[in-house]
Each structure stands twice: as structure tokens, then as C-alpha cells.
Amino acid sequence: MHAMVLHKIGEPLVWTELPDREPGPDEIRVRISACGVCRTDLHVVDGELTNPRVPIIPGHEIVGHIDALGFGVMGLAIGERVGVPWLGHTCGVCPYCRDNHENLCDAPGFTGYTRDGGYATSTIADARFAFPLGQHDDDIALAPLLCAGLIGWRSLKMTGDAKRLGFYGFGAAAHIVAQVACWQGRDVYAFTRPGDTSSQRFARTLGAVWAGGSDETPPQKLDAAIIFAPVGDLVPTALRAVRKGGRVTCAGIHMSDIPSFPYSLLWEERQVVSVANLTRQDATDFLALAPQVGIVTQTNPYPLREANQALADLRAGRFEGAAVLIP
Image (cartoon, rainbow, N blue to C red; front, top):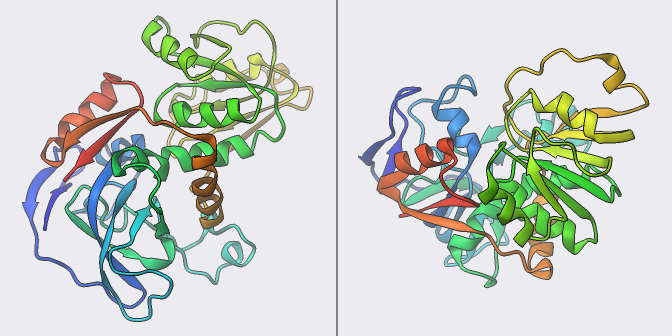
């Protein structure tokens, strides 16, 4: 197998030939056909997420076909197309796992962070955290659903029945969940980097009723806002934009420090909450919903060897939608 491997934080990934691996008990081997490039991958390679297992193969938006089964695997078959997301393993016994909050597990495993991921030609995955994808859509289009879509979906659920929704940052996750929100009959207000008229036009094509810079005030108060950009300064900005009793959801796994702000922004029962990881139920629900919505992902394919370029382009905001690596 071949992989792009992170050997040292802050340094480029290295094209590496590795021996083929065999799945252990309850594991599968997946021949990878596409792997999305997520902002979380940037946080890993740039050292913003501490203590990754190094060397590590990044990538956690994996689509591929099973080509080997470990002992005890049930419900999956050789040749079946599956998706492998960020949450790659949980202990199953801690209080969070027992209380249906496995996304908060005390001893988790994360694909592309503590377990080798999808910037490779194959990977080993815990079969219990791999999801059948059926025959709908092609591999490249499906890859961004495995994290951008799932985290977007969990974030959207946390807004409750909010009608007017603000999305701060209109990248991979927002462009997917905006389609879900519009399908549900909600009004989407898209906030981009100031002056980024291209992303604003893109948001409108996906159904946003308003799009502008994050330095602008929406035409009316929002019921809720989701912050996808890893920018702490946006928290007080979003609080100013939501109505009394509104909620601001921070969707990223990493965010720059939130600046101090006057209590008046939080008063009147506004809330600030965060989203952490995902559960298997999130994946099951969202992957069943996606074909009903007719989600169309905007993808930018890169050969696997060009993973460093894909990460650089993501960091610089050079494309709309999501980057996807093709082995």
C-alpha cells in the first residue's frame, strides 16, 4: 500500500510505501477510492490538535470497498462500499458510551489522528464504525459527507426548530448542511470572509436567502447561528446577530481563543454550545437522509500524491466546497 504520512508536526506529508496490513478481530480492510480533505486534517498536521499518534496517516472522510474481513465481523461483506468517519472506535463501557453519548467517550479512537486514516490506498477500520453506503452517488461526491456532512448535521440538530439560521464560514460543511436546512424549509443566512463575493454567490446558488461578510449585520435577527470557521472572534459577532433566546453553536474541533465580550451579549437567555465528534446514530440518520434531500457536493479532486497541495489550498481558501483525494 501507499500513503501520505505525517512524520513530524508542521512538516509536509511524505509519500511512503508500506506493507499491506491484515485486519484484526472486529476489523475490516478497506480499499480506498476517495478521501475528503477536512479542516480537522489541517488542525492535526499544523499541531493545533495536540498529541496525535505520529507517524500517522491523516484523513477521515473515507469511501472505499471492503477487501478483507477480520474475525467476528458481522453484517458487512467483501466488496461492499463503506464510509469511515472521524470517530473510529469507542470503549463502550464509560458513562458516556452507556448513556448514548459515545461522541464524548473517555477512551475514543479517531481516524487520521490516533488511528491511521484515508490518505492512502487502503486502511484498517473498526467494522462497528464503518457505514454501508449503498449504490447512491459516486465515491468522490460521497466522501465529504463522512465528516463535513456529519458534523454539519449534528450542528444543525442542535439548533432545534430555528427558522432563520446563520452560517459563519461557508466551506465544506456549510455547503452541505445549507442544502439540508433549505430542504427542511429554513432560511439560511451565509456569512463569509469580508469581501469574499465568490463564496457569497455560491451560498445563494444553494438556497441562501442572504449572503454577506462576517462583518455585516443580517437584515433581521437570527434564531440560531452555527460557526463553522475556526475563529473565536466570531462568537460575540454571532451572539449580536441572534435574537433573545437564540443559540450559537460552535461546530469545529478547534477554534482560536474567544475574546472577552460584554455580558449583555449573552443575557436574555442566549446560549453558546459546542459540537464534539459524532455518534453512529448521527451517521445512520444523516446517510439515510442525504439521498432524500438530493445533496450535491461541490468537490475538487486531487491525486493522493498531491495531498500537501490540497491542504495548502484548503488553508488558503482557494476553492469552494471540499477537496477530495483520489488514490
